[in-house]
Amino acid sequence: MNRNPSYMKSKSANKDQYNSKEYFGKYIDFLYKESLYPTIHEITGYSHEPRIKVKGKYYLSFSSNNYLGLSGNRDIKDAIKKAIDKYGVGSGGTRLVSGTLDIQVEFEKKFSNYFGFEDSITFSSGYLANVGVIRMLIDPFPYFQLSEEKPGIIISDELNHASIIDGVRLSKSTKEIYRHSNMKDLEDILKRYQHHRKLIITDGVFSMDGDLANLKDITKLSKKYGAILMIDDSHAVGVLGPKGRGTAHYLGVEKDVDVIMGSFTKAFGSLGGFVVGKKEIINYLRVTSRSYIFSDPIPPSFVAGLITATDIIYKSDIIRKKTLKNSHLLRSGLRKLGFIIYGENTNIIPLIIGDERKTIDFSNMLVNNGIISTCVRRPVVTPGKERIRFSVMATHTESDIKYLIDKCESIGKMLNMI
Image: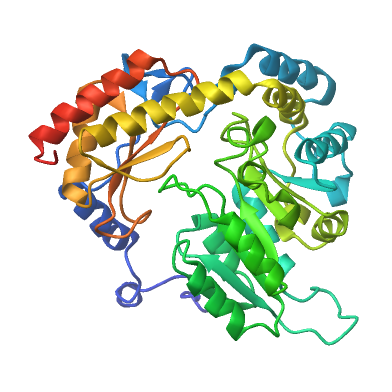
């Protein structure tokens, strides 16, 4: 009788197997030893207000993406509570398998009308929207071909968001990266592939630099060389442009953009992602995008909240102006002190430090002064590009902004930065 089946490993065999504690633990131990492991604050109660509670102490937060302060809006919360009574807390399955709810269809129609596009499709996160949509816009139809087709070319800005990078990697098409906002580099790539199907993809507002894509020139190049143009506008929708419709509308080129993608986790203060575009593109994505087909949609109660949020954003020029005014106060105030600040006309304000240790120290000193912000370093940015990233909300007061500027001044002097 065999008393040593294959699943019973001998001691000698175990020597060839890696020890999870040794393999993973050595990296974690190193990160803690060098004070490189990121601090993850445990927040009590609301995390979307200018003041948040961490371990019984209140801090001024400049790290939230809740740009318009809608995450705690009473009307939105009431809409969600009411929808829970009608729909429950979940969708019950994917939309292609279990069917789609009337409220989901209602919202997608409303949202495409808000944007001025023919149709829209929603996902349970912005990340899933990018990883599911990008390759389907340029790879051949996945099930059969009606004509001879080859994978195309994806041309992506070097500073695009991680979800774009991952979506591009999943594609079978050739990948080309152009230098950040460098139109000559972009056109050189387009020229090399002018006889191929092409997809240009760029952030509208770059999440770590706070600058705008050069969409006026990009739209001209996409038309000249017959490329599809997709914009990830997660950090602009709700804030920039007439009625908060985003970067393309802000720059007046929305009619020359094929697809706009975004997230409801920023200005909308909620959950999920979206894509708007021409009806044939959206219908195509409904039967090809794997992250749509094989993932449950946004819960119906949150969809009800998004319907209300869309109405509020459409009418909310005042809170948009307040967000951008606060951003201008912070950006200009830090620049006057001599700090290197990237970006213009957006509510993302990166204070460039360029040294990992000093960036961590700056962040910790802000915390000691009752301020929580985002310490940006590896793997988000490359070494030498480390920074503190401030996100500004409509609900910040001018005194909040002044307090942050004053503390940055004293810390900057202590670290010999200004």
